[in-house]
Image: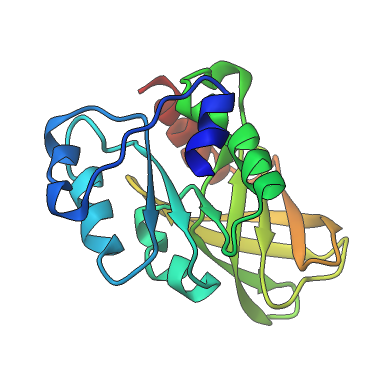
Length: 203
């Protein structure tokens, strides 16, 4: 089903057995789909550590949110949830295909999963998982959602970007526990994120 979803958008796929994962060090791939099992971390590190695939678009398959967070420092871009549903799988490929096809300039929001620490104005703390990020803000999902209009400070790291802290405001929330944070344009620390995104898109 996943192969058919990618083919629908003109993206060819090839199946690689686990024992042949070393190909990720020798060959250039645009994306990789792998099951979020016990061996996922070593395979992701193999790809991220290679010169040709360090910015590989990585899709997780199955697993829980906790499984995805185990590899958050390695920046999984998106997850196919099990049981697979064709409509959801096509929607995910459609929303991320620009990254795979390298049409970066038309796609300013980068889908990436990483753990985000959130400090509320009253000092309360929570964690969430990023879904998309741009120089202007990010969408997240967590067990709890701050109230719309809340002032927050978020912190996270992304591959080659050490942990960065940015002030922001919660601008929307949904019943599925996802919410959006718009970054404070006056926060000079946002510049580090903007520079990282430019470098990511031009690499």
